[in-house]
Image (cartoon, rainbow, N blue to C red):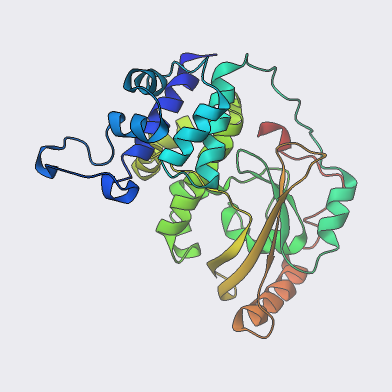
Length: 303
């Protein structure tokens, strides 16, 4: 029950109330010029949640040991939290009020069945961990993400690359992601979501520390405490070999491998992106043979 995890709750709640105006929650504003906060005051949040001001103030200061789930629900409603934000609030509370668990043992190999499943797919498919390392994929996935590797023509699956580090520290990211700002926001929001689920994960905390030191753009985004759920949608890329690509993605956790998430990309049939993906598959077959061996040792233990 470290002070750091208690403080995270207060910082998160303060960041959420700063985003909501009294008008949004139906509260009257009698003298807007005298308001000293951009969003709701603590007193207003307490009123909306049916709590005393003193009690809410103590929660925002990180004193959450006796806070019940019903109180958290009331705060989520008062602050109009979305599903990702509500889940994050409960994750932070659980971390702050339970004893730290022993670090989970991370598998050093991907199960052969997982690799066979990836290799059977005719579209890019890969697995990442909570730290957002690409820990394994099929050949087309390595072709798709070849720009993330030091040598794109010879991506080394035994040395996982990190999506967030690439986004903020590699100048090639701004060309690979046509809407870099959106991708940067998404990367940070997802990483903070995963950090809330397992705040004792040393791999995540080390990555956050590194990026906070080396990238002001990361540091500013991290301080916003924004979170996101990431299950399906579309993404745009500019690949150096085949040009522009727009894909639909699906993500899903691997229940037998806690902390690992499977992602599959697929372009809409009959589109220029589908043609580009076919061209990329041809390029991969020519240049990247042998990049997805079964039972490969990976960086999955460094999540």
